[in-house]
Image 1: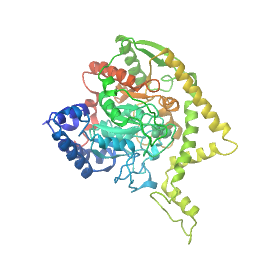
Image 2: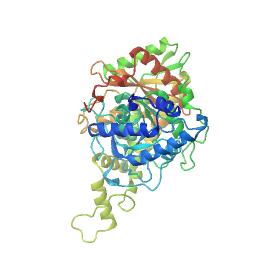
Image 3: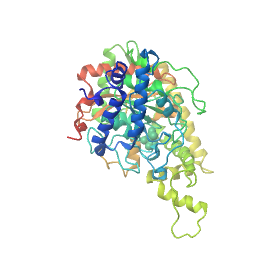
Length: 506
Ligand code: GLN
């Protein structure tokens, strides 16, 4: 029998509707794979075998009961992993933090409710940098996740658990969140596909907030079509999220099924991809550009002069919003409560201080301090206000660039996966991993990372980033699927078939 964990979500969906396999078999195969390889990968913080299998049985009943497959959700019965930042009723949700250790949410995030309604069994919750702050998953309070391409290396972050689970064949699909790159950068360094939808495209209700004006959830998958199918499940207006966009989204799967770049205007962003990028990442990027030209695209160079200030603006806006969002962890409402040492009758403030001291990691504290400072009276205009102005200029750069090009393109990340520990003590080096992804979050536009090959110098995966105007997510799938097809032809098969460390049990 074929190894079910090697099939794409699209292939699994077809096998399920034709009755060749059951969701229980598919789900069990992935649970077995998790049991086998997760001790080495540590992609999961919680595995919900019983819950997943009972959802799989329900999916099988729906599959068996349907006279025609027409009315059934396309991914019915295909299992999925969910980043531990989305609340799951009855299943622990920690956001990678000690302060939420053991917290069991009383409700589902909207996107989780949508997954359940569409019949995707939830395998478990994936590891992440604490409160999604990081680019390596090393800032998880529960220990790092390892990259299936090389266990000594990071899988990117903050959503390294989701990308490693998908790259390591523990799950065909996963959910990530992207505030500055946490879906796209992990996708690039694990050889997977990751999409940050237009801000407001996927509901944030029930997602633990990092920076509310930047956060966006999206799909992680092994193919562009798989990502599109998942995007269609989770997108849509939600009255529970005031920033959710009330619009009819076109089918992303339909877009992915009609790849094309002929006559497309592709803008190479001058400011993304030059100095500081690993030569192999640039080389693979330039090859993609050549393939696009060969396929009939018009490639132009576009300049976005304010992108050079994106990182600085982001590291004022994000900490400011985070410091406010994280104020809710006050030792009263959720999770951890620590009594201060040697105080007989501690005040609420003393308990709060002791709890936050014990419950938050270093990176989280660093950003809370930074954000509190940036928002403080007398500094607000100089820092936060200034950063918001830069944000406007970046949005204008995008608007001007999209007059010249239908999509923008760049390397997703400056380097391949680095080794665990390499950048841990150097926050600035860590922050620079998102240099190419952050502008999209500041402007709210959608972005996708598609594998672009292996860097010649280390044989590790790199990705190409596609960006489209707000609301034009479907365009990313049309173009992403075309890029994927052109590259697959040149590689002669999927990149992930070449990942050496995937046989982690061997
Ligand atoms: N690495 C970036 C940060 O640390 C992005 C995080 C994210 O997208 N959640 O802020």
